[in-house]
Image 1: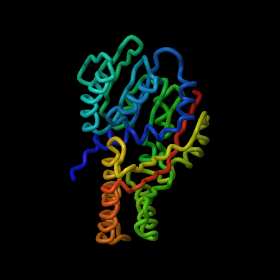
Image 2: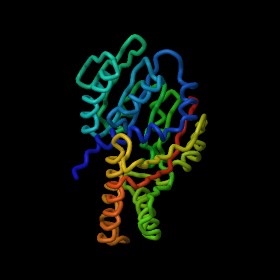
Image 3: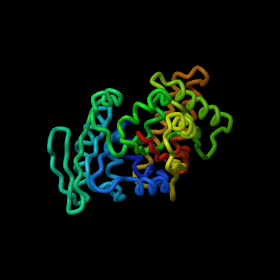
Image 4: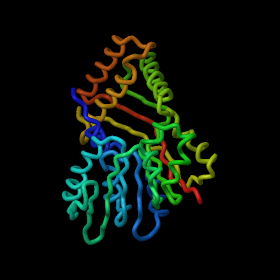
Length: 294
């Protein structure tokens, strides 16, 4: 099966919609400044968070800067964001190769796409935003060294969402001991990523934020819970599950502590469960709304 990362990002839109902690979302609504708002999203992908903010009436006027290091993601966003906006009844104007305006009687949003490594973008950015968004992003970084630098992108407010926190559960059980071993080995690959990472970023963020005198305005669980009904998954969540298994395969294929044939049999059984609509997948994560005063 050919896998597309932009397709994966699109397929997890409904999963994230359910997962995002609604108390933290309500706190964000209360703490956003009035009037036009400037937003910088790092690791922005294809623009699903922008859509979500508009759909949830959290963002109506202002500037939204999407920063992502993967050109494939932004190329998809250049087509998908106008398609989504037009389908929602918004007027769409391309104001440049990497800029858009979407508007109607109540919304006026200027969008800029920046293909750059986030730390390269930070070096050239001269205007901190009212809000920084890092969605499913921080657990890919060496946060103890990079969080303070990331926070330079905001005047103080940051929404830090879907921070993985140490649980990847599949059901039904294939083999209890093997399931446990694969989960532990997978999490270990997160902790050993060359570019940084943390399989328990959710709980560790409290300490990182305290160390930099950032106040936690709200925090809560944002677990992915994916399951089928009547042998089918909602929306495109079957593809989402297939891609999650691809993450496991890619991470563990060369693992010295797991025989390839055993991994192949485990993956095959999990794919069979997906085809029957039986597989349940749960990942524990945490959301934060934080403020750091200048």
